[in-house]
Image 1 (cartoon, rainbow, N blue to C red):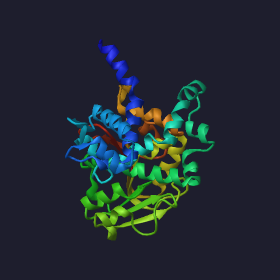
Image 2 (tube, helix red, strand yellow):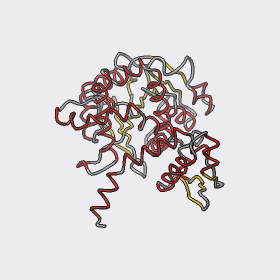
Image 3 (cartoon, helix red, strand yellow):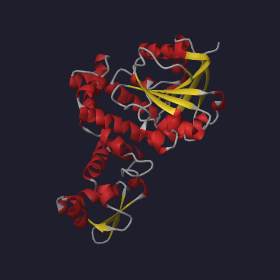
Amino acid sequence: MTDAQELVLELFYGRWRSQTLHAGVELGVFEAVGSVPATAAQVAHDLDLDPALTYRLLRALASLRVLGAHDGEAFSITEAGAMLRGDHPQSMRDALLLREGPEHTAIWKHLSALVRDGSQDGFAREFGVAAFEHAAREPSYRKAFDAGMSSQSNLQTGWALEALERCDVAAIAHLCDVGGGQGHLLCHLLARYPHLEGTILERPGVLGPGAAPWASRLGVADRCTSVAGDMFVDVPGADAYTMKMILHDWNDDECVRILANLRRRASASGRVFIIEHVIPDGGAPDYAALFDMHMLCWGTGKERTVEEYRALLRESGWTFTAARFPRSGAIGVVEASKAA
């Protein structure tokens, strides 16, 4: 087989791989299979599944290296497979259920038409409304979306914290995380920097009153509050703002509106940290470019280069400071200041 043939086949079977993982997660395979090999028949019994088809699914999962295969049709979990368990500290379970679930699978069929027509948002084409409006109407999607975002944070927060180590966080007294979800990023920042006070701004219904769930888990509830609101209308005043995987949801005009609201409410020395999958200069092949295809299908936003973020900051009145990355380069932190 030539290198070109191998590459095409690797790409060709991508959705088959991810759907096989989705089935394993949805059926509870990764909770049922442990480090000690268990037979397919035992797993099927424990999960009330068909034994013959369970064996075929476990065999396929072993081919993806999330399970290990042993003699006697037995299987054990691998280090990668453990990350698909709900109780793993870096669990990607809910992220996979969202990405390969019915809504996010359906929107991708519109990609060709979107590119042909020059008009993005496959979610609106499929469901008649934008994703956030659909989430407000459909509790099952809202639950899957919020859980999926929290799941992705298990990796993204670590990358962001590493990049933020090179920022002067000591000079910040009050930090607001805009669109901060369940508080994963902000509460980890509060745990790392004991001098910080923090506020989470989120959509009504995402958080209950008081502190976010992660505040009590990390012992920072006394320094963390949550506020329901709309970042397009107003945001809490703060010395600095973080936005993780927020601006990529919106088009340029919408991003400028959000950033302008942050600048208006920021203290005199206010700063903003935009945390996103940044496309490398020159548009080199990168994970962010694939994520950009998802954003094209999902809504009105996109992944951007540093220069594109610099332009948004300039138009909204911020002064670009720097772009910083963890060693993996998996995510970027674009920093700007209010001062000229």
